[in-house]
Image (cartoon, rainbow, N blue to C red; front, top):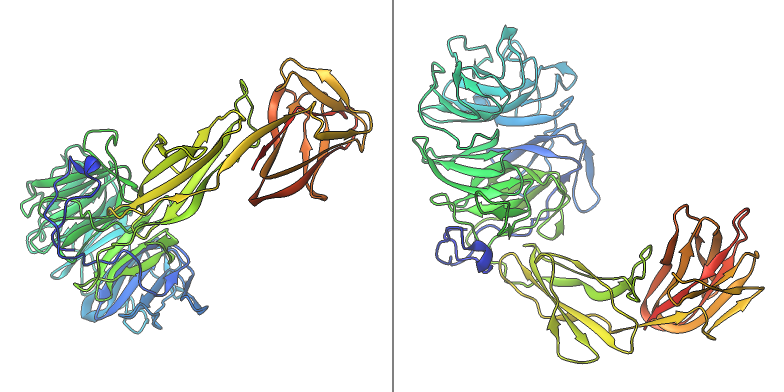
Length: 601
């Protein structure tokens, strides 16, 4: 993505550092057409043009109906197509790093690979066969969450309590060549380790600990590669648990925390910059000159605030490594509450893994590649309006003071996500006026109009998260009418009685308790609703539209509720229709009533 331009959503971005405009983004917003998995991807690693992935999944598939059964491990070529490499891990895989002699080391919750005992660590050849334990025998008594390789050592972090049969809790160093415990490396922590990054000077450890080598130091620390001695620097303020980590080419370390922050630390361990979010940062990678963060978040937030000036980024965001400036041109929207759990820069592009089933506006489950390179265009396409705004009568709502509860809904889609809606209203052809929304991304608004002779119409425009704005799309005009129970337009058969009811919509209701008694109403419109009372003595009615039974409505309630919309139905367009309400004659409480009928045309 290179240099970053000022965000088009300037009001929300004022607190962030922003760089000048780029010539063009270099990471796509929409995914390539590749294979995918049927469950979460936790770890991604490319070796020699092959991308190895691990997680919790049992199948991989393409978009042409081809599928293969796997077990928590799979590999894909440079085009994202499945290879034959698919060792069977007995449980979740959480970490993958390069092993000795071109092999692959995996760590996780498993105790078997291909049915053979491998306690949370295993070394696998590129042909998918296991390296024998006699050659590489490392193992842990508990989950392995993180791995890092530097020189002749493999650093291991997790929740384990023993390594190779020796007491080692949460953190250990092994010989890369054979998996034997490095007893001379003495680094210790008192809690789970989720992140490890090593370079020629140190290994940086992140997790849920409070002490390192017996010294108070929470969440993040740097240890000597050879001895495990504590080094200076790498302090977090505050000290939230570290759940993700990545290293830059200059030795800078980027950490994601459970405290909803992305923190950059320079090569000497001092904090360079921080970004606040509204959810955990679970994965970090460097791709095409930017720091890419993935996680549970939906918004970037000003540090030290309760996200009072949010900038929408659904589970993925890009930042300048030097100062943390947000890339305002890149905002691929990822669905699901949990979002992204793994990221890696590969020859096919930025690989993204997690819990999602859609990314960048396309169906792509749990594993996706976003193309990189100077030829990738900036997203310049505005959102597509998918739901035109229209006011809909709300079932199970109460009419108060003559005002009818309705809900106006609208929606749009865009590979970069939708960051703002502009909704306007026009009454009987008068000029359009703005509609106030609770937040810029709201997709509905409750209204309480009175029935009148006015036609009300809404229109909506959407702006995506990189500043592209659509034109306005208008929904149908709506004329809300109320027909009281006393109207001659409603015909009653078989002994309905008009009863005074001070709490009714029009101060009266028509009541009947005889099975088969019917109220009929013919109208022209695209919506209809029946207003009635829900009382202890009320029973069941059957509802018919145009001669077809569409609902059974139970008016029986231990709590008295008057002026309730007990049934509502909508059609795509206006037309002539017939509504029939038939008393079912419920035993012990047979009565039903008609207070009013509402229509929208």
